[in-house]
Image (cartoon, rainbow, N blue to C red):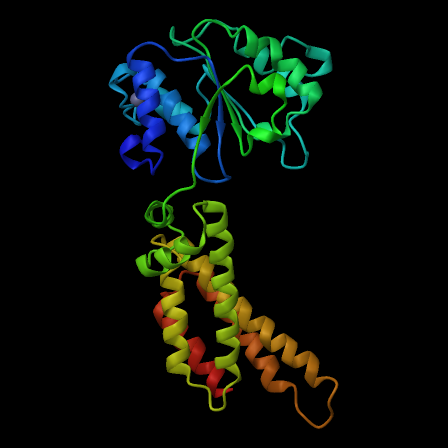
Length: 329
Ligand SMILES: [Zn+2]
């Protein structure tokens, strides 16, 4: 990725561009702003700008294609250090800063950043989830923030200045980020393949308050709404299977441009139908005189349909046949 594909945050870009051009780049930054708006991606872009081997930092145009750019993207560049809170932990651990107990000061961010840069340029570190640095963690990183190795750049990613200990705050240059614009969010969502329906992307973006995290949640809500609509249609007698198939088709299309995303969505929708029949079956078991057979057949047909998705049967044909069969049972 290069800056051309980076969405939003133009002021911050200009600011860094200027600082790099005039060789006035500070060493420690606290990037502050709402969650999921691109702060980490921004820091990575700056890292690429500084380490790209196809363009000089002053050009402020990393190529996104050289080995250095790619290694930063995937997190394997020897001069690029990235730490984040472990998924199952509530905070960054001091081990991540100064190494495990048996290897104190011989590993971890504070150690690595002092190593000579392999690239001959500089070391760059990103500390994600900096809101969760506790007092212990702060104490272990203070010295590094206070006297950063020459040329090194450290980015702390935070959602709120209030959550930072004063000791950390006072040692960093604060850069504030705002939420993304509606247009920016919609562009990003389409580019990430979350939907390929521009109207849907815009509608959700309008409610998402500038954050991709909210966009994801709202997208899920849309899916829940669609689940409700599916169940209404499945319960109609007679069931309008053509209308049903069209609705399913449209929803699958909106899942993204990649066929893998579409197949996953289709399986999810078939699962919704199957859950509905299973619930009906459970209700039937409490009543006498009604055969559970049709519900069982519907469940069987859903299982079959999911198998067909896995076997790469063409989705359009699959959806039509599945819908028609459910209506006929
Ligand atoms: Zn490059």
